[in-house]
Length: 79
Image (cartoon, rainbow, N blue to C red; front, side):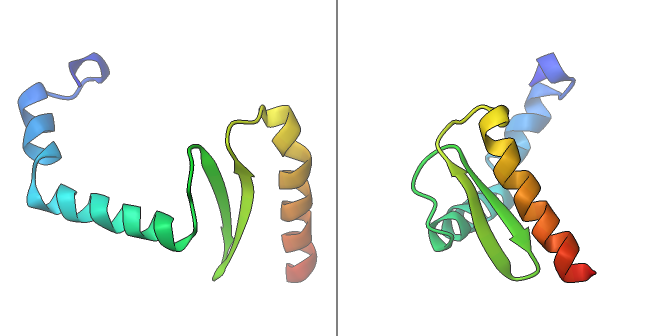
């Protein structure tokens, strides 16, 4: 924590707080709801629509065409 400018005592105070535990559990539940089963998983969201960009590591060069197509389809829908 100190390496990025966060006071160690404050970090642990927040890290072990009931609020952080609740937020972490909520994030795990959301990931389960989105059917995330591995790391990393990149999910794109537009309004209520979710799309999986990739499951597992892939270099950006491999992901970029799919991401560009997804973004272009959103521009067309707005348009």
